[in-house]
Image (cartoon, rainbow, N blue to C red; front, side):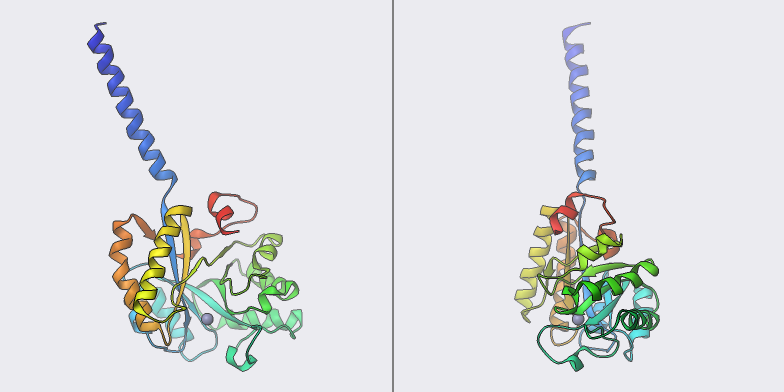
Length: 265
Ligand SMILES: [Zn+2]
Protein backbone atom coordinates (compact mmCIF):
# COMPACT_ATOMS: atom_id res chain seq x y z
CA UNK A 1 0.00 0.00 0.00
CA UNK A 2 1.33 3.35 -1.00
CA UNK A 3 2.13 5.81 1.69
CA UNK A 4 -0.45 8.37 0.60
CA UNK A 5 -3.19 5.67 0.67
CA UNK A 6 -2.28 4.83 4.27
CA UNK A 7 -2.24 8.52 5.04
CA UNK A 8 -5.65 8.98 3.47
CA UNK A 9 -7.18 6.04 5.41
CA UNK A 10 -5.68 7.37 8.64
CA UNK A 11 -7.15 10.80 7.85
CA UNK A 12 -10.63 9.34 7.23
CA UNK A 13 -10.49 7.27 10.45
CA UNK A 14 -9.37 10.27 12.46
CA UNK A 15 -12.13 12.43 10.97
CA UNK A 16 -14.79 9.83 11.77
CA UNK A 17 -13.44 9.41 15.31
CA UNK A 18 -13.57 13.17 15.79
CA UNK A 19 -17.08 13.36 14.35
CA UNK A 20 -18.48 10.57 16.50
CA UNK A 21 -16.51 11.63 19.53
CA UNK A 22 -17.88 15.13 19.17
CA UNK A 23 -21.43 13.85 18.75
CA UNK A 24 -21.12 11.61 21.80
CA UNK A 25 -19.84 14.50 23.87
CA UNK A 26 -22.81 16.57 22.68
CA UNK A 27 -25.26 13.80 23.55
CA UNK A 28 -23.67 13.24 26.94
CA UNK A 29 -24.18 16.80 28.00
CA UNK A 30 -27.56 18.18 26.98
CA UNK A 31 -28.10 21.53 28.67
CA UNK A 32 -31.55 21.76 30.16
CA UNK A 33 -33.41 24.21 32.35
CA UNK A 34 -36.84 24.14 33.87
CA UNK A 35 -38.93 27.23 34.65
CA UNK A 36 -41.60 26.83 37.32
CA UNK A 37 -44.15 29.61 37.80
CA UNK A 38 -45.65 29.64 41.30
CA UNK A 39 -48.87 30.98 42.81
CA UNK A 40 -51.33 30.24 40.02
CA UNK A 41 -54.97 29.45 40.77
CA UNK A 42 -56.09 32.92 41.78
CA UNK A 43 -55.97 34.97 38.55
CA UNK A 44 -53.03 37.01 39.77
CA UNK A 45 -51.27 39.50 37.49
CA UNK A 46 -49.31 37.83 34.69
CA UNK A 47 -51.43 34.66 34.56
CA UNK A 48 -52.60 35.19 30.94
CA UNK A 49 -49.10 36.19 29.85
CA UNK A 50 -47.58 33.05 31.36
CA UNK A 51 -50.11 30.85 29.56
CA UNK A 52 -49.23 32.61 26.28
CA UNK A 53 -45.54 31.58 26.50
CA UNK A 54 -44.42 29.23 23.74
CA UNK A 55 -42.31 26.87 25.84
CA UNK A 56 -42.94 23.89 28.13
CA UNK A 57 -43.32 25.90 31.33
CA UNK A 58 -44.24 24.18 34.61
CA UNK A 59 -47.02 25.86 36.60
CA UNK A 60 -47.51 25.42 40.36
CA UNK A 61 -51.17 25.93 41.26
CA UNK A 62 -52.50 26.81 44.73
CA UNK A 63 -55.18 24.37 45.92
CA UNK A 64 -58.87 25.10 46.58
CA UNK A 65 -58.80 28.54 44.96
CA UNK A 66 -61.33 29.95 42.52
CA UNK A 67 -59.21 29.21 39.42
CA UNK A 68 -57.27 26.15 40.60
CA UNK A 69 -59.13 23.77 38.33
CA UNK A 70 -59.47 26.17 35.38
CA UNK A 71 -55.74 26.97 35.44
CA UNK A 72 -54.85 23.26 35.41
CA UNK A 73 -57.08 22.76 32.37
CA UNK A 74 -55.47 25.78 30.64
CA UNK A 75 -52.03 24.40 31.48
CA UNK A 76 -52.87 21.02 30.00
CA UNK A 77 -54.05 22.72 26.78
CA UNK A 78 -50.88 24.83 26.60
CA UNK A 79 -48.69 21.73 27.04
CA UNK A 80 -47.46 22.87 30.47
CA UNK A 81 -46.72 20.58 33.37
CA UNK A 82 -48.86 21.01 36.51
CA UNK A 83 -47.69 20.97 40.12
CA UNK A 84 -49.72 21.35 43.29
CA UNK A 85 -48.25 24.44 44.99
CA UNK A 86 -48.69 23.20 48.56
CA UNK A 87 -48.98 26.00 51.13
CA UNK A 88 -46.73 25.13 54.09
CA UNK A 89 -46.12 26.98 57.33
CA UNK A 90 -43.28 29.48 57.37
CA UNK A 91 -41.12 30.75 60.21
CA UNK A 92 -42.22 34.36 60.27
CA UNK A 93 -45.69 35.65 59.50
CA UNK A 94 -49.31 34.74 60.05
CA UNK A 95 -50.78 31.35 59.23
CA UNK A 96 -53.75 33.08 57.49
CA UNK A 97 -51.36 34.26 54.75
CA UNK A 98 -50.98 30.67 53.60
CA UNK A 99 -54.51 30.45 52.19
CA UNK A 100 -56.72 27.35 52.04
CA UNK A 101 -55.33 23.82 52.16
CA UNK A 102 -52.23 24.73 54.17
CA UNK A 103 -50.00 22.29 56.07
CA UNK A 104 -48.94 23.47 59.54
CA UNK A 105 -46.70 21.84 62.12
CA UNK A 106 -49.51 21.62 64.71
CA UNK A 107 -51.41 19.11 62.53
CA UNK A 108 -51.32 15.36 63.23
CA UNK A 109 -49.85 12.98 60.63
CA UNK A 110 -53.32 11.87 59.61
CA UNK A 111 -54.56 15.48 59.30
CA UNK A 112 -51.59 16.33 57.10
CA UNK A 113 -52.16 13.35 54.81
CA UNK A 114 -55.88 14.10 54.51
CA UNK A 115 -55.18 17.74 53.67
CA UNK A 116 -52.59 16.88 51.00
CA UNK A 117 -55.04 14.41 49.43
CA UNK A 118 -57.82 17.01 49.45
CA UNK A 119 -55.48 19.61 47.89
CA UNK A 120 -54.42 17.17 45.18
CA UNK A 121 -58.03 16.32 44.42
CA UNK A 122 -58.82 20.02 43.81
CA UNK A 123 -56.43 20.21 40.82
CA UNK A 124 -56.50 17.93 37.74
CA UNK A 125 -53.40 16.78 35.82
CA UNK A 126 -51.01 17.16 38.77
CA UNK A 127 -47.72 15.32 38.29
CA UNK A 128 -45.87 16.60 41.35
CA UNK A 129 -45.82 18.99 44.30
CA UNK A 130 -43.68 21.98 45.27
CA UNK A 131 -43.95 24.01 48.46
CA UNK A 132 -45.41 27.51 48.79
CA UNK A 133 -43.50 29.27 51.64
CA UNK A 134 -42.70 26.39 54.04
CA UNK A 135 -39.55 27.61 55.80
CA UNK A 136 -40.86 26.04 59.04
CA UNK A 137 -42.82 22.99 57.83
CA UNK A 138 -40.20 21.72 55.33
CA UNK A 139 -37.65 21.69 58.14
CA UNK A 140 -39.85 19.36 60.22
CA UNK A 141 -39.03 15.72 59.49
CA UNK A 142 -42.32 14.37 60.84
CA UNK A 143 -44.38 16.77 58.75
CA UNK A 144 -42.34 16.12 55.60
CA UNK A 145 -42.63 12.35 56.10
CA UNK A 146 -46.45 12.60 56.26
CA UNK A 147 -46.53 14.79 53.12
CA UNK A 148 -44.10 12.53 51.28
CA UNK A 149 -46.10 9.39 52.10
CA UNK A 150 -48.98 10.84 50.07
CA UNK A 151 -46.56 11.83 47.29
CA UNK A 152 -45.44 8.20 47.17
CA UNK A 153 -48.97 6.79 47.41
CA UNK A 154 -50.04 8.92 44.40
CA UNK A 155 -46.84 8.17 42.40
CA UNK A 156 -45.89 11.86 42.24
CA UNK A 157 -42.62 13.72 42.87
CA UNK A 158 -41.59 16.62 45.11
CA UNK A 159 -39.70 19.76 44.08
CA UNK A 160 -38.09 21.52 47.04
CA UNK A 161 -38.68 25.24 46.50
CA UNK A 162 -35.74 25.58 48.92
CA UNK A 163 -37.17 28.31 51.13
CA UNK A 164 -35.07 27.08 54.07
CA UNK A 165 -31.49 25.87 54.38
CA UNK A 166 -32.78 23.43 57.02
CA UNK A 167 -35.24 21.77 54.61
CA UNK A 168 -35.65 18.02 55.11
CA UNK A 169 -37.30 17.47 51.71
CA UNK A 170 -34.36 15.67 50.05
CA UNK A 171 -33.52 13.60 53.13
CA UNK A 172 -37.10 12.34 53.53
CA UNK A 173 -37.62 11.85 49.77
CA UNK A 174 -34.53 9.63 49.66
CA UNK A 175 -35.67 7.73 52.73
CA UNK A 176 -39.05 6.94 51.13
CA UNK A 177 -37.58 6.50 47.64
CA UNK A 178 -39.69 9.32 46.19
CA UNK A 179 -38.40 11.16 43.07
CA UNK A 180 -37.30 14.70 43.96
CA UNK A 181 -35.44 17.74 42.79
CA UNK A 182 -34.68 21.23 44.04
CA UNK A 183 -34.98 24.86 42.93
CA UNK A 184 -31.66 26.50 42.07
CA UNK A 185 -32.61 30.08 41.22
CA UNK A 186 -35.42 32.48 42.17
CA UNK A 187 -36.13 34.71 39.16
CA UNK A 188 -38.05 37.58 40.68
CA UNK A 189 -37.10 38.27 44.29
CA UNK A 190 -36.32 41.74 42.97
CA UNK A 191 -39.27 43.05 40.99
CA UNK A 192 -37.61 44.78 38.05
CA UNK A 193 -37.28 43.74 34.42
CA UNK A 194 -33.49 44.11 34.46
CA UNK A 195 -33.07 42.08 37.67
CA UNK A 196 -35.23 39.26 36.26
CA UNK A 197 -33.25 39.30 33.00
CA UNK A 198 -30.08 38.97 35.05
CA UNK A 199 -31.50 35.96 36.91
CA UNK A 200 -32.50 34.31 33.64
CA UNK A 201 -28.92 34.80 32.42
CA UNK A 202 -27.76 33.13 35.64
CA UNK A 203 -30.14 30.24 34.93
CA UNK A 204 -28.56 29.74 31.48
CA UNK A 205 -25.05 29.79 32.98
CA UNK A 206 -26.04 27.42 35.78
CA UNK A 207 -27.68 25.04 33.29
CA UNK A 208 -24.57 25.05 31.12
CA UNK A 209 -22.27 24.44 34.06
CA UNK A 210 -24.23 21.66 35.78
CA UNK A 211 -26.09 20.25 32.78
CA UNK A 212 -29.41 21.31 34.31
CA UNK A 213 -30.90 24.02 36.48
CA UNK A 214 -34.32 24.88 37.89
CA UNK A 215 -35.75 28.38 38.33
CA UNK A 216 -38.88 29.59 40.09
CA UNK A 217 -40.77 32.76 39.17
CA UNK A 218 -44.18 34.06 40.18
CA UNK A 219 -47.44 35.54 39.03
CA UNK A 220 -48.66 38.42 41.22
CA UNK A 221 -47.00 41.78 41.85
CA UNK A 222 -44.02 40.87 39.65
CA UNK A 223 -46.04 38.73 37.18
CA UNK A 224 -45.84 41.05 34.17
CA UNK A 225 -42.11 41.63 34.54
CA UNK A 226 -41.47 37.91 34.99
CA UNK A 227 -43.57 36.76 32.03
CA UNK A 228 -42.12 39.54 29.83
CA UNK A 229 -38.54 38.65 30.73
CA UNK A 230 -39.11 34.94 30.04
CA UNK A 231 -40.74 35.74 26.68
CA UNK A 232 -37.73 37.88 25.71
CA UNK A 233 -35.28 35.21 26.88
CA UNK A 234 -36.76 32.23 25.00
CA UNK A 235 -34.94 32.95 21.69
CA UNK A 236 -31.69 33.52 23.62
CA UNK A 237 -32.04 30.16 25.39
CA UNK A 238 -32.46 28.55 21.98
CA UNK A 239 -29.43 30.37 20.57
CA UNK A 240 -27.34 29.27 23.55
CA UNK A 241 -28.38 25.64 22.99
CA UNK A 242 -30.22 25.39 26.30
CA UNK A 243 -33.49 23.50 26.22
CA UNK A 244 -36.50 24.37 28.39
CA UNK A 245 -37.99 21.14 29.80
CA UNK A 246 -40.80 20.26 32.23
CA UNK A 247 -39.43 19.87 35.76
CA UNK A 248 -40.28 16.14 35.71
CA UNK A 249 -37.37 15.76 33.25
CA UNK A 250 -34.94 16.86 35.96
CA UNK A 251 -35.83 14.48 38.77
CA UNK A 252 -33.47 12.46 40.89
CA UNK A 253 -34.87 9.03 41.54
CA UNK A 254 -33.99 6.97 44.59
CA UNK A 255 -30.34 6.13 44.90
CA UNK A 256 -29.47 6.84 41.26
CA UNK A 257 -26.45 9.11 41.29
CA UNK A 258 -25.63 11.44 38.46
CA UNK A 259 -23.78 14.69 37.94
CA UNK A 260 -26.93 16.74 38.33
CA UNK A 261 -27.85 15.06 41.60
CA UNK A 262 -24.41 15.84 42.98
CA UNK A 263 -24.79 19.40 41.78
CA UNK A 264 -28.06 20.07 43.61
CA UNK A 265 -27.09 18.60 46.97
ZN1 LIG B 1 -45.76 30.46 46.36
